[in-house]
Every structure is written in C-alpha cells, then in structure tokens.
Length: 197
Image (tube, rainbow, N blue to C red; front, side, top):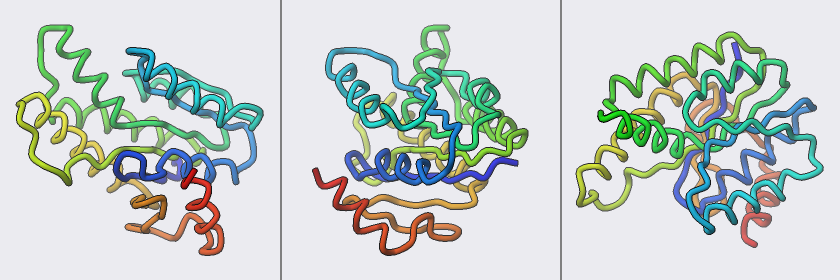
C-alpha cells in the first residue's frame, strides 16, 4: 500500500510548492501527475511556471485529466508520486459528465475516489495529493458551483481518511491535521520564505 500524504489549503496558500519540496526529499524516480487542462492563456502560463519549477529536478510528468487511477497505475514504479491537483480532477469529472449529458453525483465521485485509493493499494510509492479547501467561504450563488464545492469536499474527506498524513496550508505555513509532521520544524520556515516570493 502506498503511503498517502494529502496537502490541502486555499488558493495561493503554498500547497504545490510545499508538496513538491517534500516530494523532492525522496529519491528518484519521481512522477508528477498533472490534472490541469489548458483552457486559456492564463492557465497555460500557470502550467508553464509549474513545469519550470520542476525542470532539472528528476521529474517525469504524466498528464491525465480524468482517469487518475490509471495514471497512478502507470506510475507504480516511481518512488514518489505527486498529484496536482484533486480539485481540478473533480472539475474535469464534472465537465466530462456534463458533456455526456449527465451530472456527476457524490456517489459517482466516491466511486472514482475509491478507484484512486485501490490504485494506491497496489503501489509501494509515497503519493502526495494536492487539493484545494473550497468550502470555507461564502455559499456560491449558482447550483453548479455549490455542487462543485460539495464534490470537492467529499473528495477531500475520502482521501484524508485514507491518508497517513494530512497538512493544511495557511499563509505558506503547514498545519498538521493528521499523522506525523512531514517536515522538521526548522524546514518549515524556509518553505514559508520560499513561498513568499
């Protein structure tokens, strides 16, 4: 069974940088599973910056927007896997269901999450999942936005229940919610400083 570490938090809280820094403390081979679709120039630039941050650091990238379980099966030989991010994955699954004339239910999403965890069960990798915590603000006006919030929350709950370690990022600082601290205390200050730029 893979060791699962979930890093969650709000937008620009330092989740991705923290997860990458932790993952790079593990030896190669390292696999980055990217779930982001290229929708516009702004997203293309975000992806470019993430790619630049990994360049020359021993990462292989697998791009997979919907079949995350398959991507994890493909990455089974890796020592460490970083999935960034679950929130976009949920969005992609919602869009896929919509394109097929349906609507993604919480039960269907739970099935997808269980498939991801089953893929982890067949791996000896350490798997980092990055996810946004989107349910802490104002209740969205539109039904589709409320459904996305609910689905993202269900996904986070299921992955957190299976994870050995869960950290919540706030202002670039990790708050340990479950398990042992993923970084020594002295390392946290340098991660926070690196995220301040």
